[in-house]
Every structure is written in structure tokens, then in C-alpha cells.
Image (cartoon, rainbow over the protein chains, first blue to last red):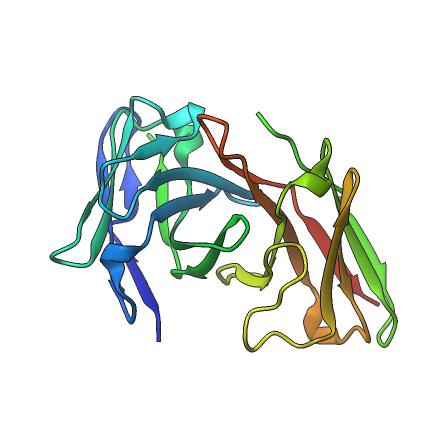
Length: 120
Length: 109
């Protein structure tokens, strides 16, 4: 079965950096686009970033553009999110999510999430 | 960018039908997907491509999409259906294509 296991969350001061990782198993990782979705405390879901199956194409939500970098290592079945210049408003649970295509793109498997707290 | 609008809350008695709406400009021309999220848990896909159910999702969950409104319908509501529900589309023409609605809290009375 599909498993997505995030790691790397924690408490960090504003302006600092953090790197999240997501270990994937149970499917052909190199065949699927992957995403990060976050959820601030008490708030809804917010899509953060996508990376194509081969790593060549990436897109980000406006609020993280230029600060966050999504990447992947298909030899290790691992997805990453490098987060720089962190802000208090980046505080959230970050989910690693597998994308799939029908007539539209949807998120068919989610990790359990890793919590990031940005605070001085 | 594309905006999805959901009512904040819906209340329903056990055994009745809950309808959760997701509004968007000409959303009927988009593919809409739905997720449920229980407290402290990751979201789970319950309907994709407007009306298709993933394996393991009960047929009490159904979806429709037309005009400016997509709807997730939960028939014969059970206490375990109490959760937050989110709609989602992928706006391929946008530089920031992932879009979620604000979520609807379903309360089972």
C-alpha cells in the first residue's frame, strides 16, 4: 500500500531555514507528480508546491515563491521541501501528497504530516 | 486565480442527507474533487473527477457538478461522517494551480 512519511518538522525562529523530507513507498514514485500541502492551526488546506514526476517542472503558491524549493530524488523515493526565510505565517502542518490524474488532478494519498512552528 | 467558496458549516441529523456545496465561476467546466478530514488526521479523498469514488469509500458519498456549483452529497448520514470537507480543483492555466475551498464543517446532531 502507498505510504508517505514526512520528517524534518520542528520549531524554528523567523528568518531561519528548515528542510522537510517525505519517504515514499508502495508505488512507482518516479511516475507521479508530488505535492506539498499545508494547514495552519485551525485553518483550511493550502496547496504549497508541485514537482513533476521527473523534477523538471515546479510551481509554487505565491506566498512561498522565492523562499521555498521543492525537489525530489527518484533514486531514493524521497520528496523534499527546502524552506528559507521562514515567517510566522508559515507555521502549519505540512503534508506530503501524491498527485494523480483523471479528468483533473487530485490528491489520492496523503502523509500524516509534519508540524512546523515558526516562533521567536 | 480561481476561487472556491464553501459554506462554513452544515448540520444534519443521523440518517438524513447532507449536501455540501462548492461554488466557483463556471465550476461545471472544471473537475472537482472532495476530501474529508477528521480532527488530528490527514485528509482523505472521497470523490474525484466530480462523481467518482475511490475504492473503500461508501456509496453513501456522491458528487455532482454543474453551472457554478459542485455538490458533495452524503446519504444516510452517520455519526462517523462528522468532519471537515474540502473541495479542490486544479487550475492548469494558472501559475499557482492548486486550489482548495475554505472547508465545510459537517456536524451530526
